[in-house]
Picture 1 (cartoon, each protein chain N blue to C red):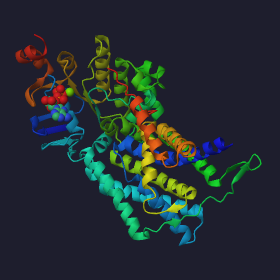
Picture 2 (cartoon, chains in turn yellow, brown; picture 1 turned 90 degrees about the vertical axis):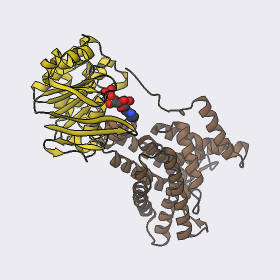
Picture 3 (cartoon, rainbow over the protein chains, first blue to last red; picture 1 turned 45 degrees about the horizontal axis):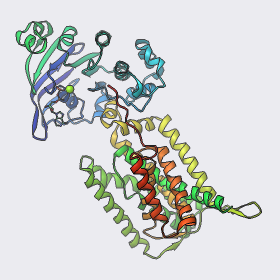
Length: 233
Length: 293
Ligand SMILES: Nc1ncnc2c1ncn2[C@@H]1O[C@H](COP(=O)(O)OP(=O)(O)O)[C@@H](O)[C@H]1O
Ligand SMILES: [Mg+2]
C-alpha cells in the first residue's frame, strides 16, 4: 500500500534521514519506533508532503506521491495525525471535526460526527467549546476523531500517547486496534515502544536517521538490542 | 451639537479605515505578511470608478462594481507574481517587495493618469440629512460609509465563521501545516484572501474619494498607512480588531483636528498607537495564544 525507498532528507546541512526504506501492506499496523530525535516525525512529514526529500521514492497504492502537495495527498485518503496533535485551538470541537472531513465532499458530516461522538462522548458534551479549552486527554481524543473524519485508508499517527495518563494511553491504543480491525491500515510512530510493539504486526527501529532493525513485533520484543535500548530491559 | 457632528464624521472616516484595515488584517492573519501595496490598490479602485463614470458614462453603482472586479484581479495578480515566489523567503524580503509593489502602482498611475489631481464626484446619490432644524447636517456619503462598513463586517463575519472557505482561512491562519494535512490548499486560501481584501479596498477607495474628492496617484498612501495603524491598534490578524481600530482611529483623527490642531492630527493618531502598543503589545483585541499540553 505504502512503499518508501531510499529516502534522504536534509534540514539545511543536517542529514536527518539516511537512506530509509520501508513498506506498509494493506490491513497492517506497522510501527516506527526510536528515541527522541531519531527522525520519526521527519519521515511522516515527508510522506504527507510537508517536507521534500532530496532523494528517494514514495509510492501510495502503486502511484508516486512524491511531487504532490499535502492537500492533494490527503485526498488520496492518506491521513496524518501530526506530533503534538496540532489542533485548531481557536476553533470549536465541532469545527475541528469538520476540518477533518475538509477533503471529503462525499461524506455525511452528521453521521461521521455521530460516530466520533459515540466513541468519545466527552467531545459531544464539549462540541461548542474551543479546542484550546480541552484537557490534554480530550485534545488527543479530538485529534484522533479529527483524523477519523477523513475516513482514511492509511492513517499515520505520530506519538498519539505523548503526555497522556496510562489509562488514556490504553484507550487510545484500543481505538487504534479497533480502527485497524474495521479496515484502516495504520502507520504508528511511537516512543512508547512496549505499547506500540504489543499492538503492531511489524516494526522498524530507527536510530539517528537510519533503520537499524526491523521485523515482526514478536521478534522485536525478544530482540536483545531492542530490549536494552527501548524496553527498559 | 458640534461634538455629535464630529463624532459622526469620525465614525464615518473610521468606517473607511476599517474597510481598508480588514484587508491588511486578513492578509496578515493568513499569509503572515504586511501587504504595504494595499493602500495603493485603494487608489487604483478610485481611478477605475472615476474612469467608468467620466469616460464611459457608467452609472456610479456600476462603476463601483467595475472597480471591485479590477481590484480583485489586481490583488490576485500581485500575490501570484510578487509574493507567491517569496513564500519561503525571510519576511524582510517580502516587506521590501511589498514596498516595491506600492511604488510600482503609484508610478504606473502617474504614467496612466498623470500627477494632476482629478476631482472625484461622489457616487452617493443621497442628499444630506438635516436634523435638529438644520443644526446637524450629515452628508449622504457619511451615512453610506457607515452603512457599507456595517454590512461588510456582518458579511465577513458570516463568511469566516460559517462557510467552508472561511473555516479554511481560520485554520490556515492558526496552523498552516495542520490545515494542509486536512486538505486545505494554502495557496488557494491566500489567493482568495487577497481577492476579498482587494475588492474591499476598491469599495474603500470609492468611499474615500466620495468623502474627500481629490484623486491622485498618492491618494491611497496615507489612508493605507493609517488603516494599517488601525489594524495594529485593534490587534493585527483580528477582524473585530480591524473594525474597532478603524472606527477609533477615525474618531481620534477627527477629534484631534477639531479640538487640538489640524496640523498635529496625524501625529496624535500615531502617538495614540504608540501608547496602546506600549500598554498592550498585541493591540486592543489581539489574540492571546492558548497553549495546553
Ligand atoms: N525543522 C527542523 N529544522 C532543523 N532540524 C530539524 C527540524 N526538525 C527536526 N530536525 C532534526 O532532525 C532530527 C529528526 O527529528 P524528528 O524527525 O523530529 O525526530 P523524532 O520525531 O524521531 O523525535 C533531529 O535531529 C532534529 O533535531
Ligand atoms: Mg517526533
